[in-house]
Length: 457
Ligand code: FAD
Image (tube, rainbow, N blue to C red; front, top):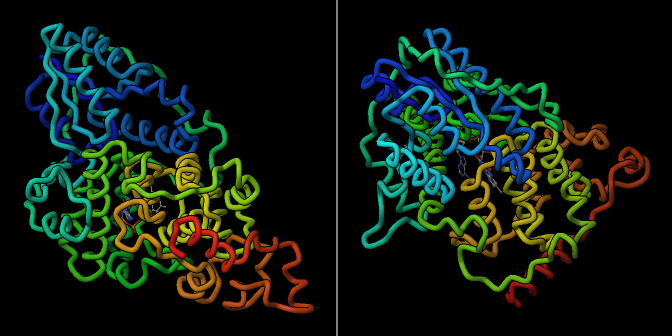
């Protein structure tokens, strides 16, 4: 018998329950990835993610070939293409993993209906993209947890399934043809410093980081210049690494670093269970608030300065330039740049969230939108009116100013933490940063506007 395995956000061979199930039940398997044409058409497929995806597919194909198989790549409507491949292979079964978005649910239902009409079966396995499936833990009488701490308490107590090894051999029927593998070289507008994708790369990165970074993660993860986080987010986004495997391996290492890392992975699950229960949270404010945000058009100059990293606040500009250059930004940078846009510039969080999604290689509806809501104080944050001061943040998390000097060359000549307040310098010292822009707004002015807008005064 023949089965099709539909890969979605789980582009790996290790710890892949749908692939394992298909290989156990069938003689031949078609590993299929369908590039969804609608995502390209709607301009939603950002270049950095397309480039990373190309690496992931190339690596998956390589891994399958080493095992006697190959990857079948198609593009178009996922359901239509999957049905076409099923017919070509004369497959009885399709295996795939459950996913959380409203889009994924509709896709799954359409596929089920189409297959059953032909007398074939769809097997939807537990999610491969989270540690626990959304809905695996719920509060009494509710569909999801709205607050992280109680969620984490329940989450931590759950038993985790075993991690599956990669397959030894994969036999793919000859009859099924593949379209061309996309290539990173064909994608335009990719960030210069974009990391390489693929399962092999992800596993190498995790192994190295586990040896050298995990132990100190608890103390160092907020250090902007130290770059002491795992940088696994794009791998988690494309599923080149299994979150269950990461948690199990981190727990084996033990210690405060491992605990802090596992906690961050729980945040990822947390946001996904919110989005699964309330898909509208991707756009609508989670709490009903009456913010009178400035639109992108009303604040055009401020928004442009923010996007281009020339707000005149060095740590904000450094982080925004890192985003453009690498397609990735440190979490502390995301927090303080998002807060700056929303609270100091008083611009609608959706404007910032869209820009992040345009550039982030890990750009992801649940993590991005819900973190933006959290920062904007429209989400589940218990301190919705907190404002991060970019100068204090700079001094605290980029103590010596090395992060700013790395990304803002205009200020590279300034020593020490003075780099966070270049406007305070005088005379010859001031001349050293002549090319660096003036501040778009005074912090006190921004704060007043925010407090007025939110009706806090
Ligand atoms: P590490 O510190 O090594 O953490 C390990 C993993 O835990 C990460 O890879 C990530 O999967 C998860 N994680 C860490 N922090 C968070 C968090 N706050 N929420 C959810 N998961 C978390 N993360 C994305 O993956 N995609 C996004 O689009 C995204 N947008 C964000 C937007 C804003 C405004 C903010 C404040 C945060 C956003 N994050 C997003 C969360 C976080 O900043 C990144 O996951 C993290 O910086 C990735 O770097 P890392 O892999 O080195 O993280």
